Length: 180
Picture 1 (cartoon, rainbow, N blue to C red):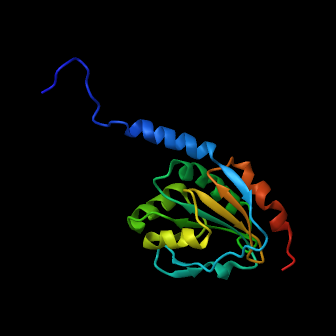
Picture 2: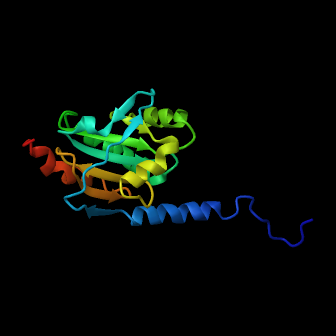
């Protein structure tokens, strides 16, 4: 029984909460230098076809390791920038590798890859998402990316979705060095 003239929304505070989350995620974008002694961990995860892929297979290249989720607005915002970054670089010099932290199967992730025309490897963490985050020293949320140099050292952690020109500036010096 409804009394009074005020209609209550069936959505509750969900739209407001999502708006605040998005604002905080974008505002929280930061880049952190990582101590030189931090070696990228050995990660082995399946790609979207189920083939096991090892992060160490990419040693000798600069890698942008991007942890994302399909439901995450800042992740969707930064994906076109990562696609463009990969387009501008030979995969033998620089490879973007995305790790989906989604837990509801690969179907949604495959649709995301098609929609955004992703041109780099996408791996699926699924139930191992917590283990992946732990091996990388913990993450506060997605997107979180790690820039890994040719020697396999994590040199930068990027939390949030930075502006598009950030990625090119961040990898420029690393890609230019071919002293491995």
